[in-house]
Length: 95
Image (cartoon, rainbow, N blue to C red; front, side, top):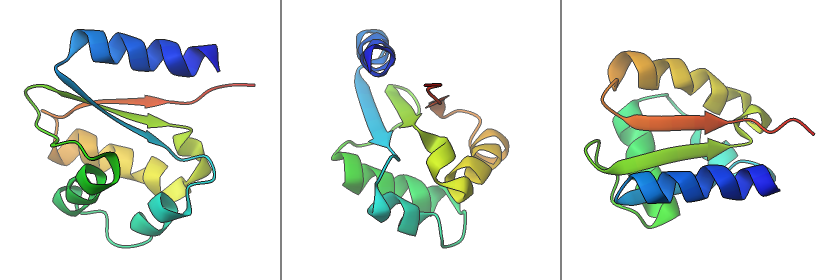
């Protein structure tokens, strides 16, 4: 758990906003990634989920336990290819 807080705290200190999504036992987020992997659609849904306006200039997007939702893990390449300006970090904790 300490690593969760450390990543989140570092992000909050380094950027104006942090949008944090934990995929562990999160059926709502699993359902989001069952659809197409259009980044704009995903970002819009993430904004609703996190109650944060996600903007590339000042928002850190953290996906915690992303390995729990394989389609979310697959989406990472689309973030990289289609939204390289997004300040996204993806966290996988090893127990």
